Figure 1 (tube, rainbow, N blue to C red):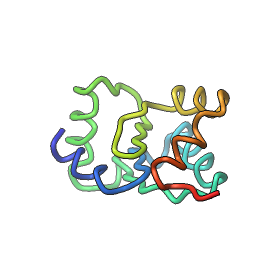
Figure 2: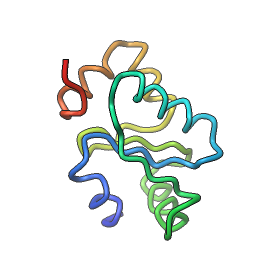
Figure 3: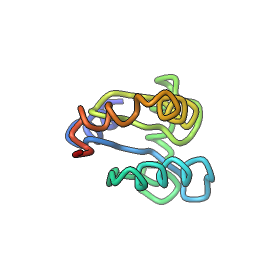
Figure 4: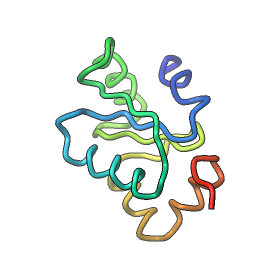
Length: 101
């Protein structure tokens, strides 16, 4: 998990994704629609992607995508969509410095 922490520590929004996953595509599109440019790691395309996926799984993230905002684990697609529907996601993005209004 140290490697994951280093990958997310200096980025406002990080998405661990898989290129063929429709939920990953949906979440990336949502952030892009907000005007946010997340750092995306496609686990099926990067070296040690499987290792990173196992580290995330060991931390309770059993589904892809996995989203970090402001260096903090937020969760997967369900959590992100829930935050969006509650109108909380935008404020989180502003606090993390990922979105300027």
